[in-house]
Image (tube, rainbow, N blue to C red; front, side, top):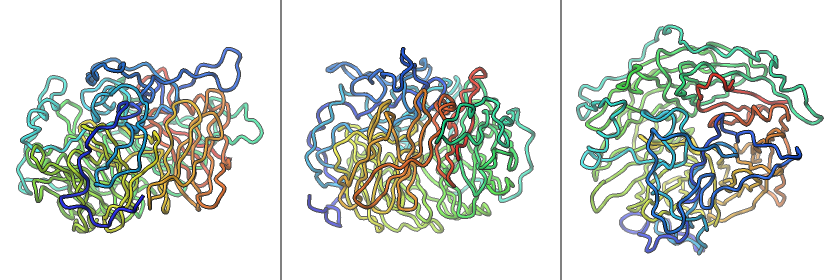
Length: 622
């Protein structure tokens, strides 16, 4: 296929797709998490006790979720108060919606190579409408509701969303007022000051398995060649409705984890207490997914415990010492521009705090306000942000409800907010995720066409390529109900000139596909070395590092694959012990990292079930 020209066609990238792709819905529906966690609930052993028990196949057309029969109208999303769905076997992570057949023409106007529509069953509810109750941390949702891959657009103008916002903000029968003046008048700025430690949270500090203890005897049956469980920690007490446990940061020899109302720090090698825990007066509701250049993070917590509480309290922490730095409050912006929820993004030493329709940048070391990003141009307002080491990307919604409705992608100077470049996206296409910021790789969806697209860009913002692989992919991304989260996908990696994506599988072996960013074509594929799915973790030392899921009677693996050359076979780096497979399977919305030859796994959400004996975090190594 001819390489697309450097300049977009007049009026922004892309042209409307004449016909929607034929076949099923958007692809895999969000996978229902297992009752006790995320890495694939322990599966029922076969009658004879053999390895690799036969698995129940997923319903046609959905990734672990049933779909309506062909010809039947799509069902509306389930109400938040609906009951939890029946657990399915598998990784347990929410899945990114997969292809509904590759669109004949993407959002940037360049036709893709002919593809056959994916036979994924009958149409699903429109993209962005949860097929399960919204994410567990969303106000008004039921406890333990599964996380999923769809995300709604939280950025709408007052003309369009006035009634919708009023409805969304009715929580527990109470209407939350969202008010505030336009501009900077009356906006309260974060105060750069040392904050006093609040009273100790009621959450108990994890205490088991410090310094190599193994009270659950996970290492007792280790076989030759198996690594060991270095340490593991029980989850702190959480409400019966569950609690968020966002982020996981490895800083030198310290592993740091947020959970409910505390931030914990453990020795990476032995699990001993490194510092803290640091307690907060209310539950933690957001955290920076990355750390700053000098090992700082920021967490946001609620300003109260009632239905009117907002996620608007900021606290900076030093990962090395646990010392609290500056703290502050995020004020609401203009009308319908609320800090009910916030999005925290780090780029170098810049912290961007995103509200509903604006963002404010701060120096992450001092808390000094740097600049605001507000409405501009053709009724455009910031919708979401994504950060990398030295790059900051903004997605804006423009002209909502008009003939010129579209989205725009911009790269900002992290220190000043100056716009380096702007790229328009054709009407009907939404930038849902960033798979990478440097280089920029974005995942887009078209609700009306029930289509998807993965596009890449050059450093100066020109369209570069789009993925042309006819495949269902399944990176793991969570819900975004009242907000759009560009960041946070796992199971996807970018290194050099290559994008790595896992093919769709719930319980059996899958493949990782290496895709060229230059032309969007597959370079090579590698199959899972076991009968369980694997997914990318990161690229380091010229090799792709991937995690292979455990089964009910075999521990997970960490493998590496050469990124270049003619041979792309997996090499096992770590084989987790069989005795820990059941625990390894139970991390709800699990977060995975590979650092210093150790595998770290932690929960992204606490169930609050006192009888489950759920774990907060564990580490494997030789």
